[in-house]
Image (cartoon, rainbow, N blue to C red; front, side, top):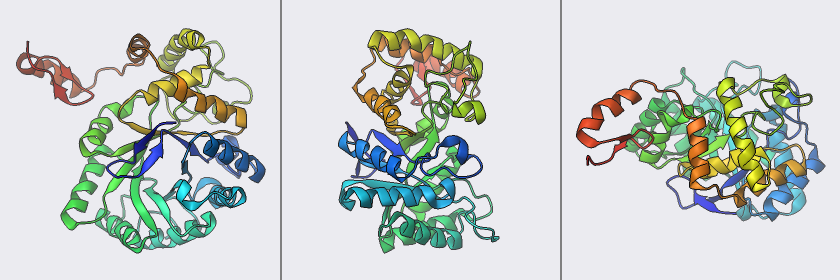
Length: 353
């Protein structure tokens, strides 16, 4: 297992992170995602620790708090020292029927963190993430509340999930101006079947030294190997019941067609190739992998041992390439005369020959 700094910090996290949305199940959307019981969770957490994973992610909203409770109990059952794992959870989503039981207000954040700490059976959260955008709460209020939690020692680092690039940039500016704790990570959807993040978020993350934590790296199971152009709704698949995240299916089928011969050459599943492709991207800090069974987790973990060749990465990059979008294509057009070809991912231009 390899490790990377968590954004612009000295905290090292494993390049794979165990996502625990499958823990406990529940009602609504979570009944389609997983119903791993306590014994199953203990097995997955132990296997993760044994293979070098030190990073675990959950959220208060997952199964109405039961995912946090199950994860916290697993650490206790297994006797894992608190210093030996990095714990991430999230705040924002509705956790009660009251008018203020949702959002990123000071009130909800302060109530939610205490509830999460209790469910997780810990005195601090390593990474506390704002799970969604709250357009009602002033951003300064959210940032001051999170800064207070850092100063109190209840939270050590902060991050966001599913935010727009301009909103993250604004928050970083406020934090710098007011000397508040800054966001160190973005948890976002990114996969070889969904590369939208590369347009604006990727360059921002690299410029501001924020870590990228990838959720749904297999596009909700679409890249697991079960789906194909010929079998678009396999029985028993989560995505067959819950078609999420949104994906350009035609491009996805092309990607899947291209992954199969590469997977065959490496003697592995297409899922491992999809994960190995993500792990080859410098902007990626850690990839969240979730599982219902030990064999699924073991297959995902094995992706760290795959090294794609330059030619294989070139093939996968080409088949999954995003369509041109303004202003990206205009930057390339106007920059070519002065600077030579433009690297749209990094926002840098090579010297003219």
